Structures are given as C-alpha cells and as structure tokens.
Amino acid sequence: VGRSLARYALRQDLQWRFAVLDSTEINAFSAPGGRVFITRGLLELAPDDDRLAGILAHEIAHIDERHALRIIARGELFGGVSALVADNNADFAQYEQVVSNITSELLDKGFDPGTEYAADKLGRELAKTTGSPPGARRAVLTSLKPPPAGKPEKPSPPPPPLDDRLQRLPKDPTPTG
Image (cartoon, rainbow, N blue to C red; front, top):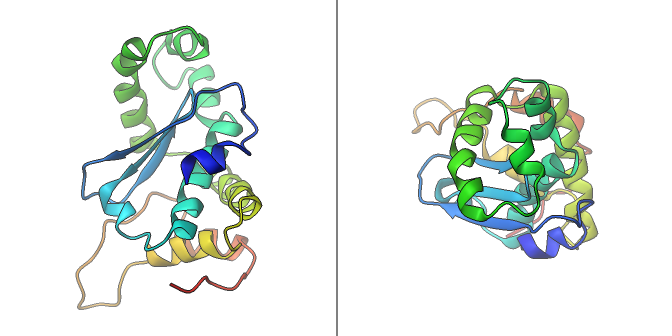
C-alpha cells in the first residue's frame, strides 16, 4: 500500500521506506527522508487497505510538504540534523542514529493544527488518486474517537482535536468493510 502511494507522492527524489513498529500505541508518523512508520496498534485498527492508505497517505503528505524539515530548519530540533537528512548519500546507519531523537521530539511536540489539517487534506487526495475511496481518511479519524463512557479507552491522539479535523474533511461516504 505504501509503495503504491509513494509512486504518486510529490517527492520522487526520495527512497520511500515503510515500517511497522511493534507497539500497541495507536500512532503513525513520518520522518525526513521518506520514512513512514505505523504502530501495530494503529495497523490493527485499519481493517482494510483503504483505511491503511488513509493513514500512510497522511504521513506521506507530511514528507511531501517537508513539515518535519521545516521544524528542524527553525531550530526546534537538533542542530546539524538537517544536513544529514538533506544528504541523499548518507547511509541508513547514520540516519538511524538520529531518527529516534527526531521522531520522539516530533511525537512529543506533534505538528501544529494547520499542518495536520493540510496533511489530512493532501493525504485524502493522494489516497483517492491511488483508488481508495475519499472517505477512508475520515473513517480512520472516526475510529480514533474515544469510545462512549464505560468502554476501555484508547490513547488520545495529539492535537488538533479529532472533531476539528473531521469537520475540515469533506463528508465523503465511509467505505464499507
């Protein structure tokens, strides 16, 4: 699914890589250089390829728009890292040394609401381009909403609030399955 989406990504200069992290946390994130990660916990909430495309396309949109690199360039993350991620000849071992620091910082801070809204919109369009129904992104976000009182709770996703994100997406039909 990730490779199909990457064929239509704006950043064709990257070597796109996708990985599943063995964690029950419910999260996905992107890192500079075309790395997209999804946790096992979130993968289990994606019952089909369409919803998985909605998740991965959102993360690809962050990379296409260079959201993380903008945070790094503003100096909000570790100095000197931007040179490493900009170096297409850096080997994967060098990258791995800093990616955990970058991703943990991005997970702690997250992207600002405007960036998340943009990635939702652009990711929706990317997933739609590859044949996923446009409602797949909405279905993913809806599945993340906290359950009614009395049921076990899932961890809350980072801001912006899901209701705000859902309100900004078109009200496409939710895929079945």
